[in-house]
Structures are given as structure tokens and as C-alpha cells.
Image (tube, rainbow, N blue to C red; front, side):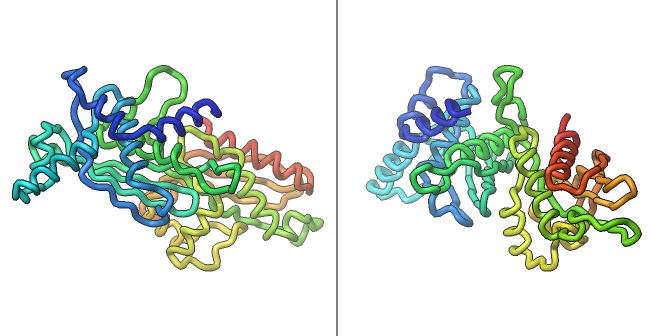
Length: 331
């Protein structure tokens, strides 16, 4: 993983103009040519530059082996020459045709806490009635050691590649072998676990201090599944920021999800959701953990895991939570 990260960082230091100039040469007549017309840097993207966005798209194009990118320096030079000659007809389609580009791309980038989203819209330059779009997500994971500042480059690249694959309708476009590869994945959020206590049984600290134990439970689930290659997973901080964005109040980690919560997550295009029940029983506590798919404002249970928490200890509860989380997201 460290080697991969170093390679990605080095790649992002290379001028996208230089790299794409090579990618758009006639070394492969079968390659399709893309012209990036615009990058819209949206929410919380002050640390992401146009340079990095172009570099990410160029890397994705070259990594596919099927595409090349018109470099921005060539575009700026052509537009400058046209304007100097009094030709102000510099629309993206005109410029794309001058470079014989096959597709015109528009990128949008947004960040909410530790989740990055890349949108790509594609227009066929030969037939503008043919359009497609794609979205890619990635969970931000890395920070610089010297100042703990978020390092966006690896996940910007991952999200861009995922969006690129969706636009091209080819989830295997970056597959080179049977090991892990970048492909489109749905988003997943971890919700509350409904605590059901019983006054007929001896008191357990897990239930007596449900605010703390439930928060620890959802954090433990995230820690267990955060490296999954099958989902882009919201951490708890980002989840709570999404709730604040929709003015959702009264959401607790020891309660079942509300209809308004699920509706809001659906609007945010969250695809999957983890929730569950923890019920006190004569055997200890019965944990049901569910992996659900969000369909509009409803949850459809995809997978369920039931385990027994036998001891009223943090260590035992965490161990059971981890096992249940592993099992419900395993393929």
C-alpha cells in the first residue's frame, strides 16, 4: 500500500500537460481522444487545484489504455491564437473538433468532511446528442505527517477513475489481473443500533451507558470495514456532517434509523446502510446486524448476522461487533 501511495503522489507531481501530450500522440491510432472543457471545484475543495483534477483525469485516461487527453497548454495556446486573430468562436465543441477529440468532458469535484465525489459528464464530439455521466466516490484516508493536513491526491484519483469507468460503462476498464483494481463501488453509511433493554434482567453497563457503548460500536464497525474494496464508506464524522447538512436532529447511535434520515441519505445517493438491534436476553445480549440497500426512503435488508454478546465488557462487545461487521460485508 505504501508503494502504491508513493507512486500515486509522484504521478501527481508530473505536469498533466507533459503526460497528456504523450498520451494524445499518434502512437496508437485506436485510442479515443478526450478534451477536458471545464472543472467545477465545489464544496470544500480549496486544497484541490485544477492542475490536480486534470492530472487525475489524464492518469485515468492513460491507465485505461484506450484513451488520451488533450493537454491544457495546447488548448490555451490554440484559444490564444484564435482570439489574437479576431476569432472569438471558442466554444468547447469548436475547440474539440480542431483537436479531433472524440469526447468532451466536464468534471465536478465536491468534498464533505472525509468523502470526495467526482462527477464526469461526457458529450460525444461527433454526435452531441450522445451524452453520458458518471459519479465516483472515495473515502479520504491519508494525511501529511508534518502537519496532519489531508492528502487528497490518491482518493481524487480513485474517485476520478471510478467516475470514468461509469461514463465508459465498463467497470473492468482498469482491471489488469485478478487482484484488487479500481472499479465503481456504491457508498455505504453506518447508522444506529437499536438498544432494547429489559428491566427483568440484571443491569448491564453496555445498556446503562448506551450513549458511549453505541458510539463505540459504530466506530468499531467503521474501523473493521473501512478497507473494503466493495464500498466507499462514510466515517462517523462525515456521516454526522451529512446529518447536519439536512438539519437532522435527534439522531442517536442507540436508535433505529428514522424515515427522514433514510430519505435524506437517499437524496445524497448513499447506496447501502448498516444498522441493527441489540436486545438484552437471559443469555446476555442478542446482536442482529443488518446490511441494507437504500431504495428511495426505504431499507431493504440484504444480509443479516446474529451473534450473542455473552459478557458485559467492552472487549467482548467489540469482538462480536467486529465479527458481525466482517460477515455482513463479505461477498
